[in-house]
Length: 587
Image (cartoon, rainbow, N blue to C red; front, side, top):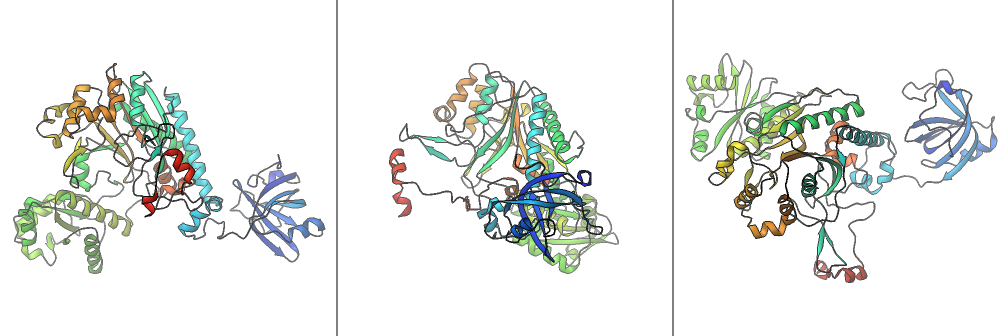
């Protein structure tokens, strides 16, 4: 080894030791002929002194070194002078007086400071990602990610799970997003797909008798990007046989508890809270509500329809619902109300009405349209208190929920209603099995096609499929979905009924999922699973939503990597070998 210690471990317990350190130059300072260098590696910083009265040769060599040069220093640990100690550094009581210096590598002047407080554009960060990753705070995120990997494997292995790798080159099957396609050179004209998830393969492993499977799986989806979405990402994929929902909840909670304890020293309380999909939307306007703060919604369509406020009455007659956001934890100025109205309009609202409880009555510029009886019925329905502000939206149920849910979060952030440092996990259960796709004017699976319908709703499959609930569940953290799963459909005849609802014929089902359906003919056990998003979970543990911060080499919003230049062109020879012609793209 070129070093005896790392740059972050030496303390006053190591005084007078002869040590060898290697690292990058964080800073270089010349104080009256004595040169001070902060030498950095991923473990921390050590201050190195080059004193001409101690060693002229090393001091002369140190005069020419620059930021981010890579050095090897041999020297002796000594205490810092009184008043020069740095209590914020683990190594802040000592320094190394250099006996010899070896320059291992020189560096150009970096395009930005390698400092955790530096403000750097996204373009520069991604182009010079290897420099960005040198920053101490970024490396801390990857230490948490590493620990989370170990905590997952430790917990699941100790609970009887087998880690099994599934293929990266797979058959293209519909899973909700576009596949990344890999042309086959050996089988010209045919393609592989990169897996959007290991869903079908893990179900086949259940048929194979691997009753407890897990994999820290790489998944790839060709979809539009945002801060919590990347073309390639990682999920903790697990599946269990002979289980029901309670078993999945217990295993997942134990695993997440182990991750937080191992990585953050946080002891989560389990079991986590639960709420149904319907209740979540009714009370919070979202199927992933953040319960760290109040601000609940109430539908008051019936109550306001008794008023003389024609805007609401006309909307209701056109099929709209009226809901209000109940704010009893914050006061608003008139300017703030106006800003909330503008914000709601920016997020799709036609308008936003408001009233405030004062002296037991509702006050605002529209209160005159609401009789005393209507006002009291609204106050009673919303449990509004003195000083409570009610914010009203009227539109279709989905749009009203969407508008008020976004407004709810906006107010919580603006009024500092979110308690810092809390980790609020929530199970959302009883999702619908199907949803209506307005763009394509058809029914489609809400989760995926192999989700088991709720036992009590099987009779609705033929007549009212949109009322059928699924045995599916999501886990959220602070209002962000971090895991999704379901009990799977292992009944071939019931599966055919599900296919029929979404207009998949027997022939089409055979073409797309034939290998799984064939496997199910040989004794498929009841099974279910869940897939926590690993990147998203780690990002939230580190205190932000952007998963790119915990991915070593992420893509930008165009799915490009500015560092290595991918995606890139293919050579004529490569195209010829694959039987491809791309001239039309350039035309």
